[in-house]
Image (cartoon, rainbow, N blue to C red):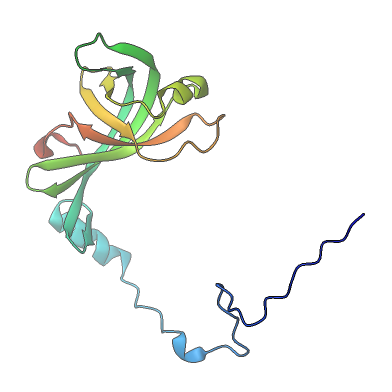
Length: 164
């Protein structure tokens, strides 16, 4: 059996940082103060829901849509093709006045999920008649998994129709 000898990397720097010989305690910061849960709940209630702030603005959680429906492909100028029955849980967010976004999870048979992943023009028609345009927002992790993360791109109820 031949032994593989690799040349030494003389004069080259590693792309990985080297570990310090002694810990640098000046890099550690004191933990931030913890707010009382009661204060946080009161603040959220006064604003009408949870508010998340980001560098570009804020998002207000409107509520959750849960239920079941039919996932189909609706290509323009073609007859819709039903793929499978799904169960869904979608969180609604208001980002600007009148703009509602949805993000959540759908569950369906793993074989049907494999067929649907990567398709465009997907529509989730809920059992109560709402047509929600959606797309998959993550990668398919395991072929045996029956859940996937989705973004709802259209068809969500307006802000005043969400239950909190």
